[in-house]
Image (cartoon, rainbow, N blue to C red; front, side, top):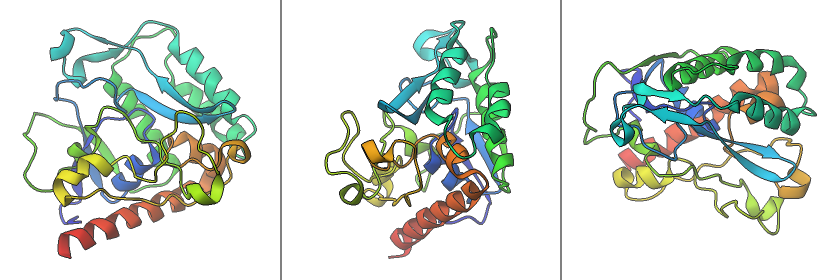
Amino acid sequence: MNLESGSSIFPLAVLPPISWLAVASLFTHIKLEVKETYPKQTIRNHYYIATANGTLKCSIPVTKSNGNKTRTEEVFTGNEPWSRVHLRAIESAYSNSAYFIHYIDELRALFPVNQVISLVDLALRSNQFFVKKFKLNLEIGTTEDWRPYSESFDLRKFLVIPELTVPISGLSENVEHPPAGIKNDIVSTFAKSIADFTHEPITLRYPAYFQNFSEKYGFVGNLSVLDILFNLGPESRDYIIQLGRQFDEIITTKLTG
């Protein structure tokens, strides 16, 4: 991948998937796309965690002042008590994880209580939290204006698919039958949308690490970065860097091959 500029534009993501942060770690500066017309059903307000009942999709309710013409920067969180519900789900899922006690208080502070805030502000707050905890050399800002997708490699194209693909890493080694609702593949979040550029999907392998419910469901890769925060703690940085390098090597090979 050409990283000479050291910067790129990324789709906004609150509590992003591991792959999002792994690719972001390849840059020194990224800007979140906030001038786009807000798309529904994406990682902009969704994230996934591993629970006792399988993979759970957590959705942050939002309000759009201009309906389907609302820009991402104009989207606000809903006034429902969603933060309490989400925190209860996170605490239930990860309370027995090795590093839960080290990070949960700071994580709680990220969630607004009885407060409506901009989805962009929430994403920035979350993203910068993980950048700091994983000690990444990365600055995050927002776009100042809308620029059409370029004909070359454009990272905003990666997450235009309606839903996040949650892959199971090493499926044949970890679980004989995939849990209901989880797709039986190892294709990354970026697979389908990047196909327009490379003409074939990208497959990322997510090295397995301990997850509380892996004995029941098998290892599930590419969940929210919350999963590595609570399960790997300080080792999360190495995991992110390793996965980012894997992505970079694949792209470089496709571009030069």
